[in-house]
Structure formats: structure tokens, C-alpha cells
Length: 148
Image 1 (cartoon, helix red, strand yellow):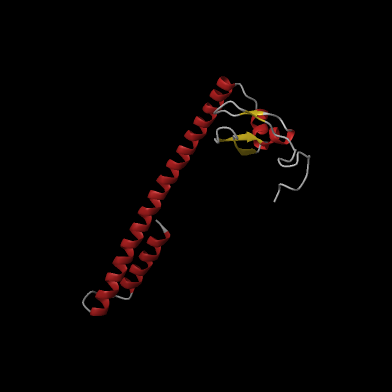
Image 2 (spheres, one colour):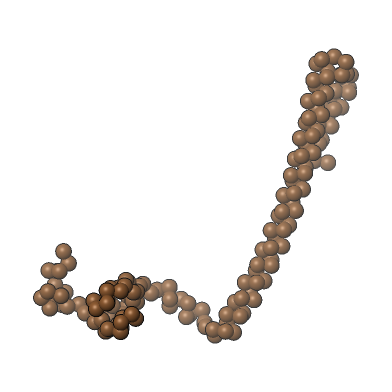
């Protein structure tokens, strides 16, 4: 028996002990209030039962999802044969958007390649794009004249 049912049973006992009858207006009101409280207690118990069932279903789904995740990890290892180190290296990479001076198409380039001044081929038109620290207008390395 739930806490709510215990409280309602206590009120019913008080009403019987006080010999409240439905003959008077006040007695009829009090007995109806107790009856409504009993209905509320039944509904609260029903909701708790549904929550317990829902919680059990969530736990079961969580276990099932964990099993699927483990199976997928095994499958990835078998198919790709990658180590965790392969994924950690990708996290450190920053990519920058570059526009091809020939075709005008934008694409992303690893920021480390740009920093090292390595050449990159445009995936759209095949033009080789050179990344240097030289200034476009004066040809000097590291000048501030074009950074306005």
C-alpha cells in the first residue's frame, strides 16, 4: 500500500470514528472529498507503475544500445584496422577555407600545410596553389603592408 493510500485510509477511519454520515450536507461533502482523494491515490499509484515500466524499458534499451555500440566498434576495427591514435591526430588538425585563384572555387586545406608553406592542388581545376609567407604586393616575407 502506498503512502497516499495509507493517508486516505486514515481519513476514512477518522470519518468512521467521528460517525460522519452522508445524511448531513457537511458529512456528504467530507465523504466525497475522501472518495476523491482515494481516486487521486489510485492514479498516483498507476503513474508510478507506468514510470517503473518505462524505467525498465530504458534500462533494457540502454543495454541493447551498448551491445550494438560494442559490435560496431569491433566491426570498425575489422574493416578499417585503425588504432585510436589515428583518430587523435585528426582532432589536432584545423582546416582553413581557401579560394582557388584560377577557378574561384572554395575548398578546405589542412592548416598545418599552409603553415609549412606546402603547395596544394585545387581539387576542382588541378591548379597548384603555393602558400608562402611572402607579401603579395612587395614580395617580402613577414611584412605588414597587406594585412590592413
